Image 1: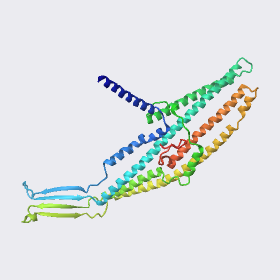
Image 2 (image 1 turned 180 degrees about the vertical axis):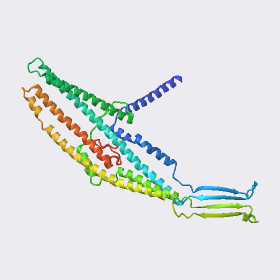
Image 3 (image 1 turned 180 degrees about the horizontal axis):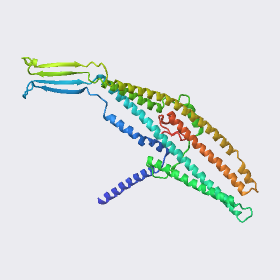
Image 4 (image 1 turned 60 degrees about the vertical axis):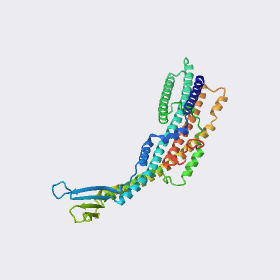
Length: 420
């Protein structure tokens, strides 16, 4: 019996261990889609979360009665009370209605605020990924440049005892090698920093580069997305404009509330009992109704100042729309320029037969072959840097146009535009 129990416990522990190992293995794989999707848990969205939870628990409901008074009066200084009054002051119905509407607007506002915060959070993560990939490429090219520079020094060192040895050139090339090594060290430092940022926001501890095997979006796909978006204005349903308008809508409704609160005291209903009035029991009771006629609002100057502020905010929205349109158009021009640059450099690389001709020449000097290798490496490096500049401008365009958070959310760096 005890033996069976022990075997059962061992099996149970073994299964638990497998589950834990499975979870650890799953967490050990870095995924670009998961990293972007995790933007929903970014700290920028925490404030929105706690506000939403608060509104679910607390509603902006004005009470039906905003004040209740009880009064007692005596005609002399004895303990006996001669007069009792109970007064009820109802809340202004316009104030109740205004607060109810504000609650509804606040809930809608939090939806827009969430989208705005998500837009900023996911935008930052896109740029972190692009910076990571770009630095990886720059480090790789820098390492190749160092190898070629070392070969350059070896060629010069081979002529060390000859009369044509140029010590000045040798010293210059040694300095170039040192500068390249310093550049590589700086790139590695930048890579460590961006990797730390990614791991900190994603709670990931593995090696990012070892787990990345991504197929990136093509240039033709980017052109199609930008052209599709450019059919309509970039400020239509734009989250940046909606975020400004939501605040204006709330400010306007606050003015309505404050205006209603300034006329809160609309009157009263009072029940009273007077022990000295009349002989019959019913004669002692009475009811009073008072209505306040509001002629002026004491807060009117302040309300007018608030209205002027709202007018200024609306003017800011118009200016922001113009600025966003200009920004989006500039980014489109940047993309067109970068595509043309890429086309030029790609054509130059594909048509470059220099290295092939040099390899076919048996009498080619080592230093000439090395210069050709440097030239080709430089063009390939430039081609890669243009690629990342295109992706940066593309993501910037999606961010400013508001398309970055279109539903469903997509990974706009991936070839298949996977949902995230």
